[in-house]
Length: 98
Image (tube, rainbow, N blue to C red; front, side, top):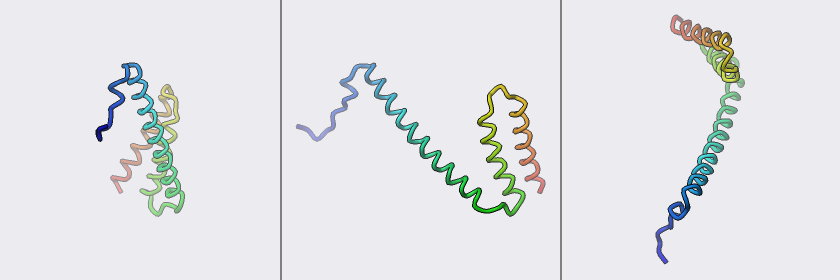
């Protein structure tokens, strides 16, 4: 008996190794997705907790909502994607001017 762990992946066939790698990757993606949802919920709670005290804070809240809206748009909806991009550009331009 040895103290060194046995790398079982070396003893599997190529198909079994690929299947194992895919399961591991899927597990990581699911864990990351869960973590991202939790962080997003925390952010939204903070955004809703208090009213904005400046136009810049209000614009950041609107930017977040516009990004969520744009992410849900179908890729073929060029008109709305262009409108969201224009509004976000307006926010950037106006925040630099103030």
